[in-house]
Image: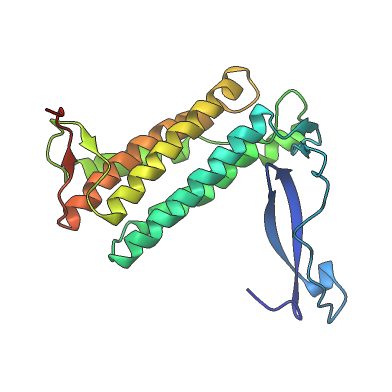
Length: 227
C-alpha cells in the first residue's frame, strides 16, 4: 500500500458486528485529502458502545441480532480459510488462488447479509447484489478435485496433516455460517444464492481437505467404532 503521505485511506463503514467491518478504498490525495496530509484514521468509532450496530441500510439493531450473528460467523469463516491458506502456501499448493477468491466473495456475502431487503433502497440492493457465478465456480473446482480422489467409503475424521485439518475446521465454521444465514434468506432479507454459496463452499472445503491430505502423502483418519 502506498504511504499516507501520497495516498489517504478512506474507510467506508459497512456494518459493525462485534467489531468494525470496513471496506478500504484508496483515494488519491487530490480527491480525498490535502497534499501532504498524513493523518491516520482511527479504527474505533465508539458508536457501538451501547450494544447497537448499524446495517448497511442505516438501521440500528442490537448486536445480538441475527444479522450480526450471521456476519460474525461469515467473518470467522474467512479467518479460518485464511489460516488454512497459510498452511497450504507453506506446502506449495497451487490452489491457494481459489481460497483468495473465496475470501473476497465472503466479503460480498457479508455485504448482502448486512443489507436487509425490508429497509433497503434500490441503490443498496444494486451495490450488494450477489450472483450465482461463484456457486458455479465452486462446483467446477469440486468436480476437478474429486477426480483425483479415491471413492469415499468411510467417515473421514478431520486429519491428514495441518493443511487438511485446517480446511476441515474451516468447513465446520462454514456449516455454522450457513445455519445462521438460512433464516435470513428464508425471510426474504438476503439473496437465496448466499445460502447456496455457503452450502456449496462446505462441500468444496471437505473435498479440498481430502485432496490436500493425499497430495501431501498424509493418511486420513477413518472413523472406527470404539470397542
